[in-house]
Image (cartoon, rainbow, N blue to C red; front, side):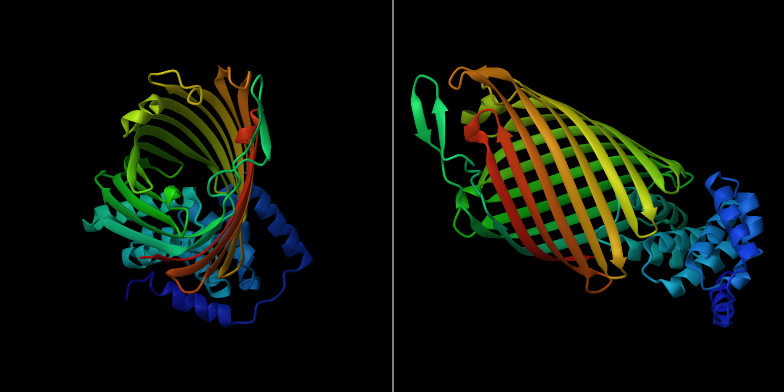
Length: 439
């Protein structure tokens, strides 16, 4: 038997012994160890924690700091035992499951590590930085075992849309010199929606850090009555990825095709360099630049053809092993390729905050708020005004895991847009329920 595979058995035996509460002196030492860990003095924090853990076998937090400190100083046997103990106390702790799989990789338990990483990937609310970290390790395993990895996710459900046609929030609008007119009324409808996503990873780097990632997806939304607003979206995103322990570098291509009411509407192309860096295990930043071009299929829409640039900065912070907070700031610019339409050229800035919390082992809550301002360049002679749209958006998403691979998702969102051209102001909310599966 691999000596590391016996760690779980030894850990279980130790855990079965009666643990004693820490004395006041030991509590003080534990607080000092946490300060040392936060300052990245891992050797010192490990020295203290390794002298305390036998009296705190049932303390998940102490064992987590012990495992992390042991991992950083190369004491993988101790790290493996600590993370195994936590998995007994809280088997659905995503952060601990990730650290356990990482440690298993470093001691050569590749099959156990792969199984752990794949189980984590089935979490539907997995933060992007965790997903990228998993891809790094799966790529390394693929390199060592001369394999590649393939993942599939699918979703199907129903949606209620209160304003399918983006009808105006105002009953009337005024055109200077022409009079007052009646706005279009909002129309509501039910829809069924389905999506299918494919991800393929192939490692080609000598050290397991460089890989090719191919992602493809298809999304369908079909309304029961408002068929003119049916959409089918196809997307393909190849990427070159390089990961190390602190950073991730990606060069992502994009080809997107949208079909509206059964007809090809536009094709979009994009190229996005992205850099992610971990300042510490609980704090990660993302910086990205995206260049794009959009070509409309029908000749009557050719004046909508455009090119765009987008800059994105984000910070993601783990509040606890089961909760995280992410903030994004995005600035973008779109310019028409030809023609003189006044609804193409604009500047846009938006902020987004996403909070995720796994309250209980099988239940995840996500809350999202977004504020956006879009300012159009061109003056409307019809309305005798420039157009600026301000949008406020909020959503709640409840995810109930029914099994390792299947989840029930219930989501509600509200969107309010106020425009200086009142005809473009609208209110809209949607409610959806779906089943998702990951393989």
